Image 1 (spheres, rainbow, N blue to C red):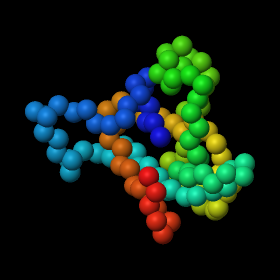
Image 2 (cartoon, helix red, strand yellow; image 1 turned 180 degrees about the horizontal axis):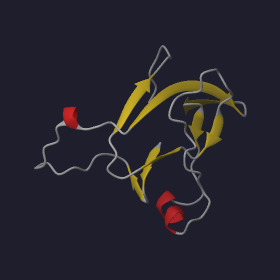
Image 3 (cartoon, rainbow, N blue to C red; image 1 turned 135 degrees about the vertical axis):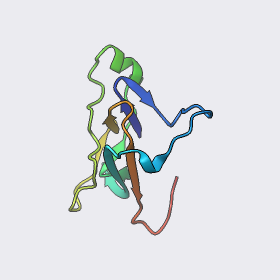
Image 4 (spheres, helix red, strand yellow; image 1 turned 180 degrees about the vertical axis):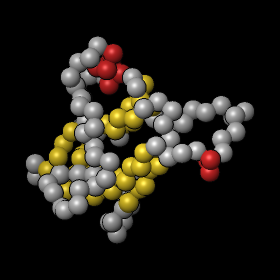
Length: 116
């Protein structure tokens, strides 16, 4: 899964080691509840996050974003898992956030095992 931040595609925190962040004093601007699950899509066992299983796009995401090519749709992964069990889908999994937002991410795993 990729988190897109205002034109920047990021995979993690790249804060400078000399900067101190007091996490208790930062206002949470958004909460994401990411629930993993297993589903059968097109006859294959696929792992999903909030009902969406990742499929690699034909073009690199940064290049598609720069040239505004419709390879992906922002917000394809909902902020919270669906309340009822729904059919899983294949999509380019993107979560759209604003730069400098403090996002609280909650990971849920209802399965009896962990597969990475």
